[in-house]
Amino acid sequence: MKVILFGATGMVGQGVLRECLADPDVERVLSVGRSATGQQHPKLREIVHPNLLELASIEADLTGYDACFYCLGVSSAGMSEERYTSITYDLTMVVAGTLLKLNQGMTFIYVSGLGTDSTERGRTMWARVKGKTENALLASPFKAAYMFRPGAIIPMHGIRSKTGWYNAMYAVLKPLFPIARQLFPGSVTTTEQVGRAMLVVAKKGYPKRILESSDISTLGGPH
Image (cartoon, rainbow, N blue to C red; front, side):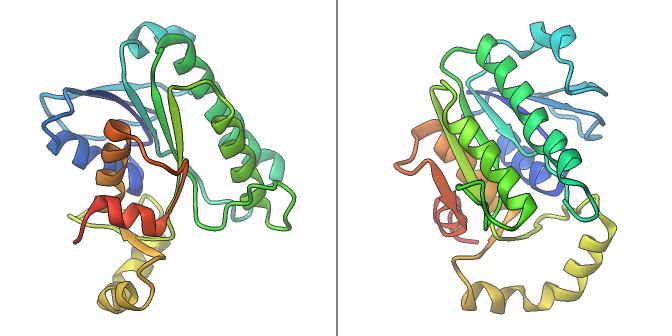
């Protein structure tokens, strides 16, 4: 299996990349993003592309892939709905449209979030925009499209967020993670489980097109 990964430098993307490189069924991983991961591996190729809204110049490099793991995302804190929509919806659909054109039979897996609003009419701005993005992807003619809605994600294997206050929060709460996983097993997962679950779904499919945190944890296996 050949995989394209968007967002490999983020916390979720780092976990997904780690599991892709470790999986013997993954032959090749192409990371596309605005910055390099800093990793070297025989399976890994990277394209640093500053403007992801313009992919025409790298289309030749985006062909021949079986799955796309889309892990790009930003916090909506302090952001207008117009700006958040541009980054979350518009960018995702540019990438999806380009990959649809270039890769027949591709599976597209999108990382959304717990609480995403499929009706697109709720009060919470980020949830509406994520819901709009999910709905558009589910309506796209990919071989298959799956929406991952993790809740709290515990970073594993030294993975760190690019957001400083996330790292500070994780450091403070880390001793409580085992308790949280016992008390809220359906809402807490790990970067390892997210990556493994994506690979399982890309290879074998899944009955549900929207996967909640409990689905992700089950598919990703015990930690």
